[in-house]
Image 1: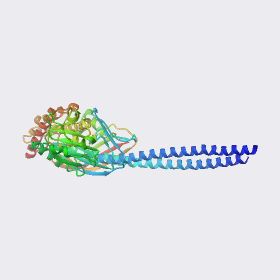
Image 2 (image 1 turned 180 degrees about the vertical axis):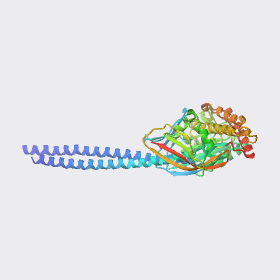
Image 3 (image 1 turned 180 degrees about the horizontal axis):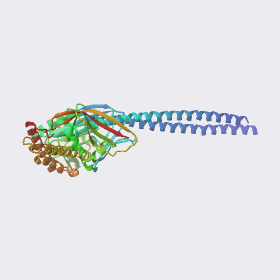
Length: 365
Length: 154
């Protein structure tokens, strides 16, 4: 009887032992897997970071290059705060979703949607010239984002402008972009895109609504960007929903200068994203403008008394660079009038530059 | 007594099993740390090269004709303009080129040197990248031979 009881205890103890040891082994392997997974994710994020760094550098070095880059399917989150800008750049970064790894982009000008999750990243860069070269803009997108450039069929200026932007943006062969007239907007069906943007090259009347197809309406993955201006300058307005209608939001209005910056607005997620990247661009413009201002002063000092060349570097010219500088004094609050002064000063600089060249004097830029 | 011996045997097997496992993991972790370190060094080197390329392509120093860039050419007049920037004006470059010293050096026909940016950088190790460039003198419309020297401090 005692022997039998002892046997039962022994069997029960064996099972208890197996259970405890089993749990320990299981826990050990689970934590090992977790650690390994975490480290592999970090390694992957670091690889993507390196790839992205290459893209950023490449964009800063050479422009006009469009490429499609294979990426591991890791989400990229772009953030840029226009209210957190200083003379050093803006509070801006690219974060790898969920990894905690981020790349600081305080001075990198990147126009894109806020979040990109893709295995193919479309990268394109353009140089931003304001007479002289200022910097390169990098545009990032994915194959499942669609852009419609919409013109007013009754307005040839709107049509020509939209066609000109279409021709420029079409240089990026990987971008899904279509040129349509205003009456065709409601015919465009939603085909599973991650985002659809309609870019209107006219401002609709206050009572007009932007009618889109039912499938587009249902998807809730679309918005409208309103453009008012020409190829040289103008302003863009991001949209808001008011009374069930998509309308221009006058509080989300910011100027553009040249086609590359307008294309930047088209690629941008929203007003803040566009404004923030433009603030970085304007910081660069201020620095490059200062260089040309100082250079022109030095040329004036060198040619002082030289009747042939002195004129092209005197205060008439330096005042133009000063005008650009003062227009950029408050980039956070850039107005259409500031852009007009820049455009006018740039025209004058171009004129003095070609005159200096004709008279065999060193170019201003 | 037999059961106790059996139990002791099982525990010993488990201890040896865990010992081998931990040994393997430590060995793998050490290997991973070493390979990550060498990858980090490689990335640092590549980052330094990227920085050099970025400096070379700065519109603030590049030669240009009506906005068209002339690669591997440095405009001496722009260099002297940038050199004379106030610390306030140079702030922007501290974000773009942290811990970097940039100088331009003429080696022919004369020997001259211009400190463009970053004169008070301190750090442990320095990587020096001399890039051969043409130095353009706008007033005489002449090109000289020289180097754009970039020192990256890490």
